[in-house]
Image 1: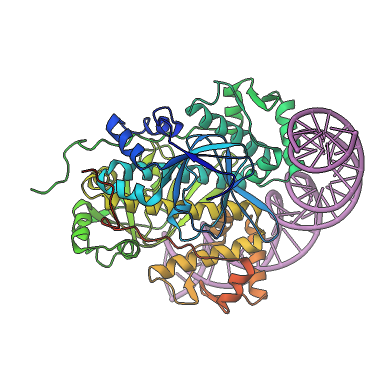
Image 2: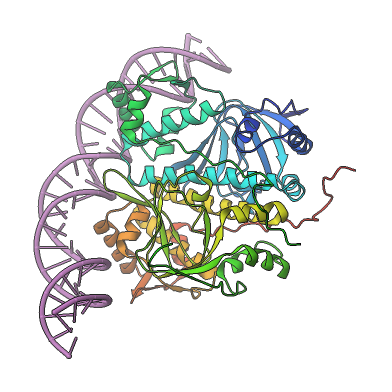
Length: 260
Length: 260
DNA sequence: CGCCCCGTTGAAATGAGTCAAGCCTTGTGG
DNA sequence: CCACAAGGCTTGACTCATTTCAACGGGGCG
């Protein structure tokens, strides 16, 4: 549909970061993998700075990010931009926009991005046939909501320094979950302008906060790679606590409510 | 389980605000109503100021609010409190907490509150048998996430005056959807301390913003009732746009992906 | 080679928080 | 039924954290 895009055969899903997250939530059988593969219409690669979702347009796809980074944001009349969330490998671009008539925010790639495309309607149809996929969608939605909730607390009541520390820890945590980070460091794919717009801070102020974390020896940054010298220490400093979903109960778990 | 609570027979669900919201999302059949009634274990009433969910505890229920108001919040070490969201009739108390091991925030009633209790595990089991309920859960989750997203934009980048106007409009919009508001007014069940903690503002500053909206003739408040003199005007002022979910596609919508 | 993006730093202006006090209303217990 | 307490609203003065505006340097990319 667009010059900058190319769609080819979907690669194997087995090593997809989305599947990696998913298999931590439920007993994921080979059969389920086939169900998912069946409704994926292709893989796509887009360039850095390419818009994926634009406000006001209809968007009805779940794009499962295989590699690369993007941001979900809204720009106001005043020209200010607020980023809701950063999108990492294993995340889904079409959430929650696919549930609404017209998109209320935009998504843009901040690096080259590779993802698998699944039409929303196909996914919904699959949910009717294989209810575990509906639950999966709910679980992802709950996780997303919880991340948003933390961002509300950040921008509403936490100090800029805490916010920044927490954001770095959140990104590290999420990247580690899909194998994109080491135990104590990760490649930071976002400019300070992006970080500022996530945290509701101006670029100069954000910059000063970065400098402060550095001066306090809590982080060091060399060539876009963030390293935590003492992970427990920085977690203590900003009271970071990772979010952990419970697993999705399997179909036959206890009793059942079926009528005779 | 607690002195202040009393559980009695679930009343009819037909007039439940939750069902009212739900029936706007899908073709809700009498049969579905029975499915839902079957897994509801009772109704409960709690007093104003009663804690429903407390941080760190496990909570595995969906509480469908029938009447009254509550808030979902987190208090920080500094003593500051951030409210994530206000809970109105038709909302679900156990979201997203039931998806996590231990609750990451608290919920407290700010008025006397009546709700129907549905054990989370029962609901999940129902999803396996009747997949439309799984989709329903996803839809609710998406809506919740979208509201959170707007709050992030509010606290991150909007002026205090806009935030306040938007919050009042959001509450009005959500109350109207369940028949708890007139076309241009509603009972405001929240103190200024609560409003401040939703918007990330101090009470004195919030108070000044209320005064300003009043002075500008955008709202009037008499005896806890907020009245919009000119609804389009205040919506224009803060660029408020109601969120509208698409309907859940029915089971047989087009084609199907079943294999032979 | 030059442009543009990105990071960095400084100085000034201002918006919002904090602290403090007073008043009104509501609820409650004597 | 009254009195007092507590919660909620309102206002003022002061402080300071954060934004805004501005300028500069480095480095990668075309």
